[in-house]
Length: 118
Picture (tube, one colour):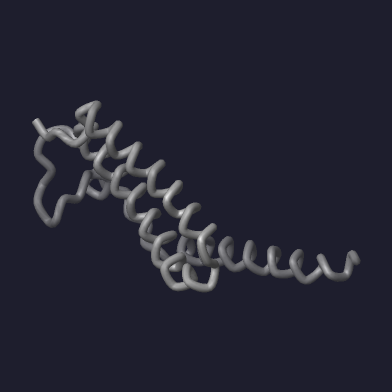
């Protein structure tokens, strides 16, 4: 049984050596220029104006999370639609429960004003 895990261990060692070797080679070959201009923020070829710490509005994150939730719903909905006829009634009930939970989450987000952009 230990022999079965040996291949995984060998793969892990090879992957670690490859990653470490690549980083070490880029350190050896790469230019070593000590310059203050090198450590400045780069913005599309233009000089940075102001601070680089900009606070993003929380609404962007809220919309992103709602998008992820309903995107994952679509990931479950399409394979289910392919096999729903072969699975019969229980699959239809399970998907109705799943969609009901997601719709209730959307209704809650709507009620709390998460979808209002002010």
